[in-house]
Length: 139
Image (cartoon, rainbow, N blue to C red; front, top):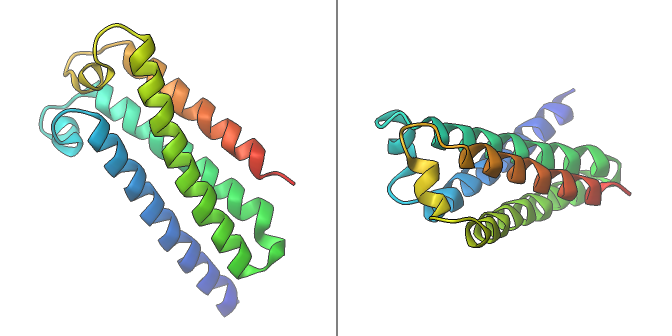
C-alpha cells in the first residue's frame, strides 16, 4: 500500500505541474493576467476556457497513467510527462489556429467580462484536442 501511496503522490505532483504549465501557456495566449480576469473581472469566458483546459489536460494525464501503468512506474511517469506536455503544446497550437480562422482576436474574446460564444468554441477545441491525444496513448 505504501508504494501505491507514493505513486499517487508522484503522479499527482506531475499532474499539478502539467496543469500549471497549461495555465501559464493559456495566460500567455490571452491579454492581461488570466487569474485576475477570472477572480477580479469575473470573466465567465476565461472561466469556461480555463476549466475546459484543466479538464482536457486532466484527461490526457489520466489516460497516460492508465494506459501505461503496467509498463512500470518510471516508464509510466515518463509517458505522463511527455503526453502531458504534448497536450499543452497541441492545445496552444489549436488556440492559435482557431485565432487565425476566426474574426477578431480570440484571446481578447476569452477575457471579455460579458459572455462571448467564442469561449465555448475554444473550450470544445481544447476538449477535442485532448480526445485526440488520449486516443494516441492507447496501445
